[in-house]
Length: 210
Image (cartoon, rainbow, N blue to C red; front, side):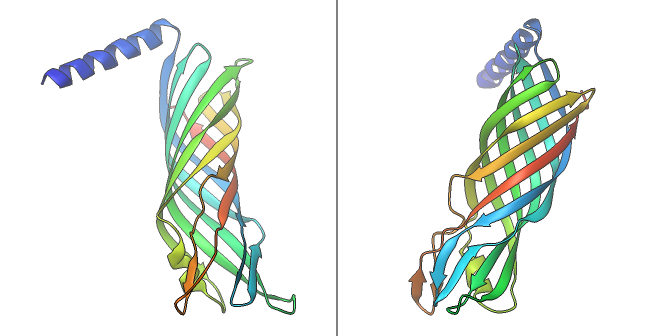
């Protein structure tokens, strides 16, 4: 009970200070689209696995923002569905196939930013991604082995610019990976290095409920 009272008192004092300094708290839904690229360079069973074309995805969730003296912290909770493509080339240098992997995951970016010229913002921050499911679309090759090798959680960063128009929160961000999606692939008891990284260009729109 004592800890609960102290925690409530601390929260009350913090919010009071934020409002007293001209800060505010915002919360609302958020949706958007992205273009993802799978960056990889590996050789498995004499086949070369390389970066494919960018693929589109979407995300939806909620965001919150605490602002103080022009600075703000904006955590988000998003369900993200995106696709990464890998180009597989055979020993003759001919493209054997384009493998596609769809990632359904929960993303938790925490953006730290600064507002200037009233409506413009710059922000940067870490993002944690928790893989819910991965589905591979391959005609041949090691689709199942590669899909099974992807990690359950990865970490990255996001950086970009934003605009606040009325109650709309618009952000254009780049997401880079700080950790590999996989630590390697095992085929017929033989281990191969395989370390893809997923990067994204993200466009999001949020709506401030308050």
